[in-house]
Image (cartoon, rainbow, N blue to C red; front, side):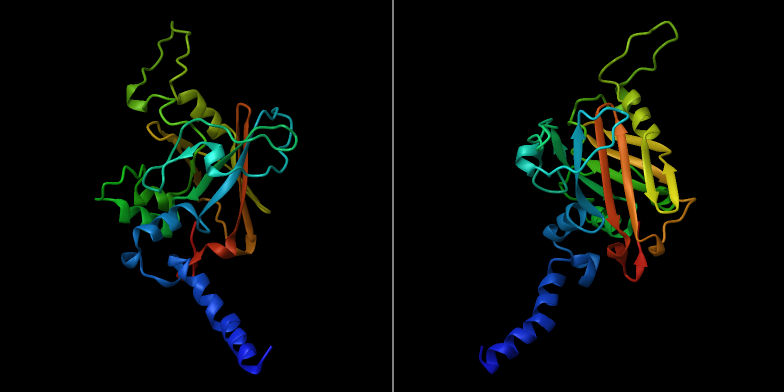
Length: 255
């Protein structure tokens, strides 16, 4: 290697590579008003606050889910080309090596400021994306959104479901209430010092997007290093870990 080649390599490692990395992280170097549609998609679908997770099917309630290889979006049945059109058509990914079906989903901290700023950029556009919570909600709760777990249009919207009478023992399979109750009962945010249960869960029936609300009464700090979402309902099991040092925005931990 010549002296000039070494100099160019040294420059790239010191300056070029960080610039390329920053260019792929709009939250790190651009103001929200300058985010392009592609930047917004990146923040909402592939950022420290929005990451892929593997859902495992067929695990019994007393078994711990093991690691699973994530299938691609195509094999998982994840439809919608951008954050503005999140939906799952109900397809399941290829089984893992233990023949357990898996599914690729997105877990996103919608209460985090970068996600709220990105969502605001979609408002007033042709996007079908709807924010099901207020700024006050985001300040009161950790709101985690799961995209791709529930098939689109499997359940009725809440406004279209009837409250069962005392004499009616039948169950409407299209009523999301029992599923949401089970999600709330079996969803936890975990750190080395915290185990918090969900207080609420909401479903966008048209897209299958699930929103789970955890209280902020127990604060998560950078000293916790990692936080995990663990969820189980029926035979479905989800566990996703986030590194807190990656979730700093404008000098502040944003969750």
